[in-house]
Structures are given as structure tokens and as C-alpha cells.
Image (cartoon, rainbow, N blue to C red; front, side, top):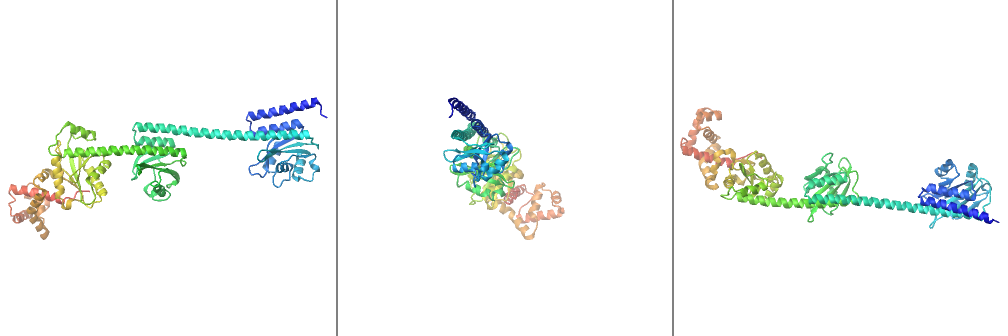
Length: 594
């Protein structure tokens, strides 16, 4: 019978062991260290030579030693590496105790007929007796504590109870460690989410500051590119890039050919059906992922945000940020649209006022023009563009298009004509040629006439407009194939101010048609000869030299012209009338470069 002193000694040892385990649990020791501490206490309390704490692996197929005391590292590695202690079939003491959730005591394993695998291990490791106690968790056994003795021995109830109590502590330690690990994962996830929220909030503040500062689209693109570490392209619905960032290195948005193929084409089509960020797993020949987001105003798609060159598809937080940026870009585009509409209206009003007869050169007019970015103080050039009637070329709408895409010239509409006012220097001809091509493309008209009026000094735009409009009216079928520059006609262009266009056309037909009909019938060159003769100052030798013919040929042709016209070419009045008639014909037959 156990004496009181022995009982106290055993109780003290037990309390010491429990305290040691509790300290390990509270100190958040690694699970392997904590289980090895329990194995050590089992050996110390009950007098075992070595002990192992085994846990079932996630697959449930074998038991894996996670903590031990007294066992060699080679033996533990062998057990774990070769999966010696299998659960199915259970031919070890540990596996039987685990599967049956019962404590098994084996006084001498070499005398047992069962547990063949354990007998082989006993011979290799030199143990004879062992005690296996399951780790009984609330749902199912988690593992088993196996204590070994090198000599055969019987296990008393007190020894078994002590090992079972240690097994309960091992179970509690295991559950506590798992709970702590879950808490740490939760804390880590919450910390990560908090960092994401703080990051998103910081970007939102920067975004709102840019909006309040009216920074424009380029700073918005730069901020989004920095935040997402991607190349950003802001474009309109016509695929025209409005802002790109960063400048270098920049991965451009997909080109026109790529947008016609999968997977880019269905992604773009989906933007009109649902307003959300669309990831593209493999975009373009480089195969990198990308994304595209819609920019919507009033339920209408007005632009797109592209993210290219990114290492990954945006996560939910980044998607929300992209959606915020798309909203701000929509606000910026709406502001620009309103600003452009206002400028177009002001420009149209200013042009209409300048074309009124007797417009004064007031400081108010100059200031209004300067506010729109135009200096009317110096020499100006007025041009008109006429589109064939019924072709859909509304002059007012074309004025908005021209102003938005051609350097924002001073543009308006008058009497169905598109009117442009530009500085005389530098030469506006290239700009007007581009406007001509643009109008021809947008209006989809077979005939477009662009006429450059004579130079304007002061604010005498009304006279210049009347001259250019008269030139348009003289053009056959209301149009020409290119740009007619009346400045090249010199002072003769001002003759267009006299009379109506119908009268001028009739005057030219009456005067020069006999020469034209004779040339057509005889394949002669009377018109060319008379014009050349007038241009060189009515000199026969000079005209012959210019035409590379004999002077007698020129004299003969002039005589024949006098006969057909029934007029004396030596008369100053006849020469002036012919000059005007040929000027009208120049306007009617002009074929300038498109």
C-alpha cells in the first residue's frame, strides 16, 4: 500500500509536470516542442525509458511522430519517412489504440502474437513493454501517446491513469495550439485587410484631391499607374488615347487588330452590357494579363480605362479602386465636354458677330477672341467649307468636330457654310487641307468645297466672307475637289464682290464661251494664248516665249480671238473684262490639292 509520503511525492511530481506543460502552452511554444515536453514528463512520472506522441496525418492513413523523448532522431525519421505506423491495416499497438480509442498495455511485446509490425520495431529499438493511450478529442481521436520500457513490466492502474491524464493534457495542448494558430491566421487576415483598406483610403484621398484641383486626365492616369504598378491608358470610344502613364516603360493598350480577336473582342463587347472591370487573362502577343473598365456618363459608354503590363489580374480591392477612378474620369470627361460645348458656342457667337457688316475693332471683341485662344490683332485669313446639300454635313456639328480635332481654330457656321478664321502667319494652308479631309470624311459627302478668302486686315471679315461665299457659289455643282486659295488670284479676286454670282457666271459665259467652244471644236489654244498674253502685259514676244511658239502664231491666235469676240483686244476695257471673266472661270474650274 502506498504511503502518505509517496503519495505526496507523486502528487508533487504530477503538479510539477502539469505546471511545466501549462507554461509551455502559455508560452506558445511550437507544437513539436510542447508534445516533446509531455513525452518527457511521461517518462519522468511513470519511469518509462522513452515516449512518443503521434498525430494522425491529414489524410488519416498513418500516424506521424510529432514529439518524443528518449527516441533517436534516426528512429523518428524512419517512422515518419516510411509511414511505418499505418492506420489501415492496424498491425501496430499504436494503430489499434488509435482506431479503437482505447488504452492498450502490453507487458512484453515479444510474447504477443498480434502486432507483428510492433514486434519488428521492438527488436530494432530494444523495447519490450509499451503503453498506448489515444488522444481523445471531442470529435474523434487525434493521435496516440506511446510509452516504452526496455524491460518487460506490468502497468498498474495508477500508471495507466497518469499516462491518460498526460494524454488529455496533450489533447488540450494540441487544441490550444490549433486555436492559437487559427487566431493568428485571423489576425493576419484582418491586418492584411486593414492594410488594404488603409491603402484604398489613401488612394481615394489622393484621387479626390486631384479632382478638387481639376488636375485633368494625365495626373489621374499617373496616380492609377503608380497605385497598381501597371501601364494605364485612358481612351475615348473612338479608341483615341487621352492620357497614358507611365511615360517609360509603358505597355500600350491592345491595337486594332488585337481588339478584333478573342479574348479582347468579347471583353470590349461586354462593357456595353455591364459596367464593371473585365479581366483579360492573356492579352496580345506577349500573353500578359490585362483589364479594361468602362467610363460611363448618363448610361452611355464614353471611354475606357486599360490596365496593361500588370503581373496579375486586379483583386477585389483594386477593382473597387479602378471603379472609383472610372467614375472620376467620367466626371473629368463630362467637365471637358461641357467646357468644349461652351467654347464652341462662344466661338460660334464670336464668328457670327465678326461676319456682320461693320463689325468694329473693339477691345471687347479682341478680348473675347483672346479668351478663346485667338489673337485677332494681326493679319487674318478667312476660309469657308461647303458640303453638298443633302449629304448630312450639318455646318454647326462639323464646326464642333473641327474645333475638337484641328488645334481648336476659331470656327463657326453661317448660311450653311463652315467658317474658319486663322492667323495669316504661319501659313494656314496645311491646317485647312486637314480640315478639308476631315470634313469630307465626317460628312461622307461626294463633293466638298474649301475656299480660302483674301487676306483680312483689321476686322473686315464680312467682305472676306462674301468673296469666299461667292467663290463657292461659282463652283459647279456647289463644290470642288480640293482647296481653292483666292489669295493666289491677287487683286482679281476682289472683282468677285461686284454683282451677284449669277451675274458673274453669265458675264463669263457670254464673254469667253466663244473662245472655249472654238478650242473644243478645233483643238486650238485661244483661251490659253489670250490669258498668257494678258498675264505678260499684252506682249506678243513674251507670250510666244512663255508658250514656246512662234510670235506669228500668237499674233494669229489673238486676231482669231478678236474675230470670235467681236472686240478689240487693244482696248483697256476689253482687257479688264477678259481678266475678270478668266478669274471667274478660275474659281469655277479650280482643282487645288486635297
